[in-house]
Length: 393
Ligand code: PLP
Image (cartoon, rainbow, N blue to C red; front, side, top):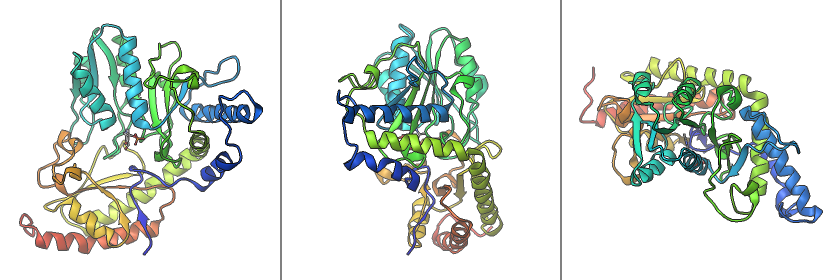
């Protein structure tokens, strides 16, 4: 059975070109970039080249006198970038005790903020409407001179809804606050320009854009004091201790270059595939709805609620055909509680549990999506026949 992988917001396949770029750094060019000898020094130069590739994807134009894109710090994942950015901002905003965020952030933000709440920080979570759009009036009202940081995601991992981050950043700066955006889902899918958009911090994760797991990057604007999360050696200009994950950093550089080169054409192709898939579902399955800001969402993401059934059952039946997707439930604990994103959006109680996220990539084909749409028709009909909540409408 072939796998049809429609869970690309969870993780992506490493692009073959990326894998090839990484290959020499395992058994041939395995030197430590911190070494004095040329064998290691040559690797350090490759890391700087990868740093420039990431900077180019993100629009970070600053280079130091050696041509290094020093505003980019390599991390181990998106979560580390998120944690580090928040830590840096609150340390730099000495004495200010308020942090503004949204109600739909990733746990990499939420759990770190919960920790800060225990240390006297006041966390203000701005709500969203039924389409996942931020309540801008509540945001404006929350901003004040005591705000240390605003951290708002660029695009939501469950619905793909894009926040107006440029405007949010401008307003944060007007209030004298730092601005961080978690761009883990946006990078490689949307054009990003940290210099034009004005962000102070932005985090990305390799494994969401066809680089390997275990590597990420944080953009941290020069001039803002940096507080490292990992204290150790002098790596990353003293901003992240620990010998670099060289091959993965090279991979992230290659993936960034690849994504940048094909951004616009890939977005068009992904949107066409995704929209065609949604149209098929809407035409063939009753009582479903597509979640998120339909005019302004990631081109690869489709969050669909199937009323009166449970997402977990849908996923299990899809899995029998080799189809991988994910649900909008926090089902890791065995509960079928809708996710915090679905709850924040007030998705109706009979629709939220049956929410499935399909997230596609450039490696998906129209045939795969047709097959999935076709198989969903009997799957949903079968589950609804078994559902105590479903009445043929
Ligand atoms: N932020 C968002 C929006 C995400 O979707 C994810 C991963 O799903 C993360 C952060 C965390 O990234 P990582 O898995 O690299 O820590």
